[in-house]
Image (cartoon, rainbow, N blue to C red; front, side):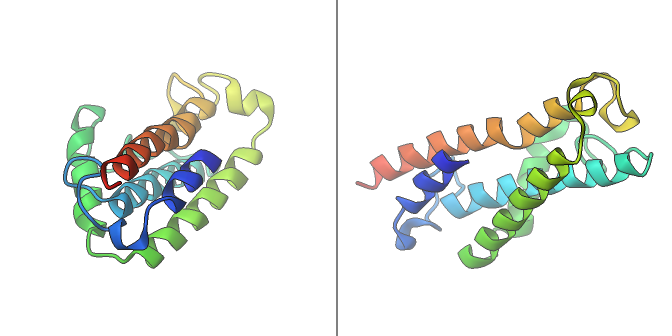
Length: 149
């Protein structure tokens, strides 16, 4: 996450809401996207710890509809301000870290350990919603920084 934070800090405040970091998305929109995926993981975690299961990747969406889900996240938060998005992202990142730390190694890495993870592991979902997503966003933010000079 340090690479992502470093990349974000390199973007001038005046450019954080300018489209183009990822097609029509701004850097702020990328951060809102990451926060949205953090929160989906947290909902799964909470439901799973209670013995339940939540719809994957989110209620009303299948994995094949991920682009539609991502667009819905963008629509939901595109008018939110940088400070609000940044604060939510920081909060959800801390909450995800705490959630991950609440699992034993066996619970974290074993496949089919919980109903909510299906045939995969908690770790697989955590990596997808955090480090892999953060690395993707970091590359986009760095490319955007170069494009704006």
